[in-house]
Structures are given as C-alpha cells and as structure tokens.
Length: 261
Ligand SMILES: [Zn+2]
Image (tube, rainbow, N blue to C red; front, side, top):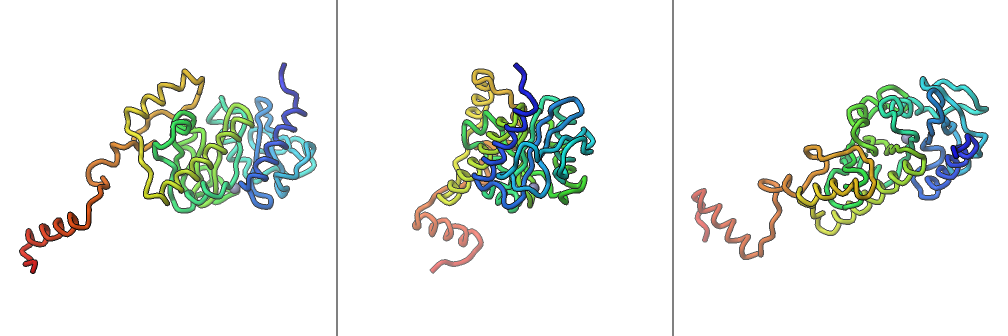
C-alpha cells in the first residue's frame, strides 16, 4: 500500500519534532523535504520552528524550487534539496540540521573521515566536509556537488550537516549516526586520540554491506575513510619514557656536534 500525501506530511512533522528535541536546530533552523512525485517536493516552511510544525504548514514545490501549494513560504534552502534530488534519483528525502558536535567539526574545518566505528563505516563510509557557501545562494551547494553522487551524509563548512535517503526516517537516522559519530570522535580525541582501524578490517566491513542489506553508495575512496596505514611513517605516534626521550635528544645533539655535559 502506498503512503498517502497526508501520511508523508505527518512523517515530516514527526521528524521535525525529533530534530528539535535532540537540539540539532535552534529557533527556525533546519529544513526537511520528501520527493512525492516526479516534479513535486513536500518541504518545510521558512520561519517556523521545526518542532512546532503542523501538517498544513508544509509547502509543495516543483523541481525548480517554485511553490505550487501552501499558505507559508518555502524553506530558503530549497535549492540544496532540488540539487540532491537531481543528482540522486534514488533519494526520496533530505534532512538538513545543525547538530552541535558535527557542526563543531564543520566549523573547525574538519571532516569526519576516520575509520573508527563499524556501523559508521558500513552505513556512511565516511562524512566529507563540503566547502562553505553562502546560505540561500547557489554557492551553498557548489562545494557539495562533487560529494553528492558518492555520499549520503555531508558536513557543510561553518554551517551544519545534510543527510538524505529513501525515506525521511532513513535520512533522519543517518543524521543521528553522523552526530553520534562526531560525539564519539570528540571523546576519543579527549582521551588521547582515536585508534583508526586498518584497511583489511575496513574492507571486511564494506564487504559485509550486502549481508546487512545496506545500500550505501560510499566505497573505499583514498583518504575517505582514513585507515591506520594512512597514519604510518611520518605521522606515526609512539610512546617513549622520560629516559628514552633524554637519550634521543642527547643523540640528536651529539650528531649536530653539540657537547652534552
Ligand atoms: Zn542551515
């Protein structure tokens, strides 16, 4: 049985409440859409808190982002949604929010690109960082274009995150995984630095996708996710005792002709 438009309106309202309750948006931030037809997109209005929407607040737009139906004005970021639908015919819903830990990474100019957690590697591969673009202008999506065909979750530099999937719930759960991953990465950094998985384990996780029925696009791209081997050599961290460190410094000074008393 196909889902009716009224049911899909209800799904957007429910996901809006969840996004708001989780603290992924402040005030009227964020936007959510569902592609309900070839040239019809059901989307959230601008200027309304996503936790307090009613089903008849939602707008229907065409694939150019022009309003077809609705009392209120459509989200100012509709172009990001139409860009994703145009590049990804498999995608039926887009969720954009500003989850604070993931957005912290985006504001620090950092992607979430380490091979750390099995569920994230299976579900998302990694989360690239799209270059900053002024909201409400075509520049917002310029930095995302290269990533949209291959990834289902993106960080947006100095802005937030966007996730997309076959249903609004799948897009929402990707956003939840992304924010959870950002929190865990942050804690691992506080505790001395994340221990990245080796390539052989990452390959096994990618191979297991068919077993779990995961249709994620992202495969093993060089550097996304970064595996343990990417940190070998010059970037390798190692531990030494105080005595070993002094001996190493003495050795280096002697090699440069400095007399150590
Ligand atoms: Zn935003």
